[in-house]
Image 1 (cartoon, helix red, strand yellow):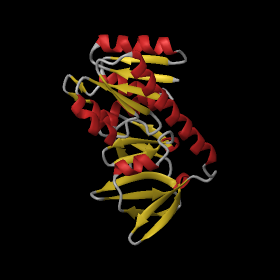
Image 2 (cartoon, one colour):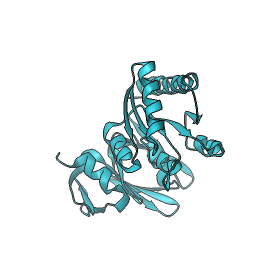
Image 3 (cartoon, helix red, strand yellow):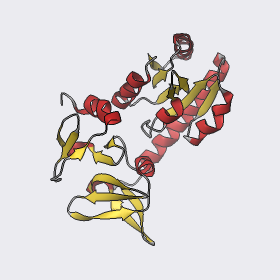
Image 4 (cartoon, helix red, strand yellow):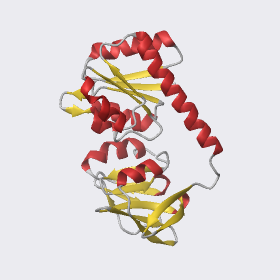
Length: 233
């Protein structure tokens, strides 16, 4: 099981490392830098992420909103009052520091159960992947393979499709990230999600897609993740 731990306290990371070693079958990488940790998460796509909440001005709650959908999140923090917010971002469990091995083991068991369920759902999903989007007063089925990119429009999104008219749906970018298979898509701007396999070129400010004439901007907070994913390919 691939795991990443992000915490600005090296002692806390050492404890997680010792617990992972004791449990076995856990490949762990640790980071005191949230920026470097999140970059590695996007590259490596781990199964489990252990994440502190208060890290020198960086909010673990906000970082959690950027995790790939398939990651199982376990919060580790000394501040119990964050528990409710933690579960609102779909955390598997919440470890209140200081915690001991038995409590850590139970949290990892929950993550394993979530991973097994996700795998089962993936195995039983229909071969043709599709989204159901609300368009005015009806639901429209859109095959994922048709989607070029998604564009935010205030309280709506515009889904641009290959060879088909675009669709405007009452949804948020966060909801689109939750529905789209993020192994195939990447968010490059607060207002854009693009299909990875269609990327033909990019700079630090814009990205080009096959079958799309206009360049799509890259937001400053997404530059590192785009570069890490595509640079050198």
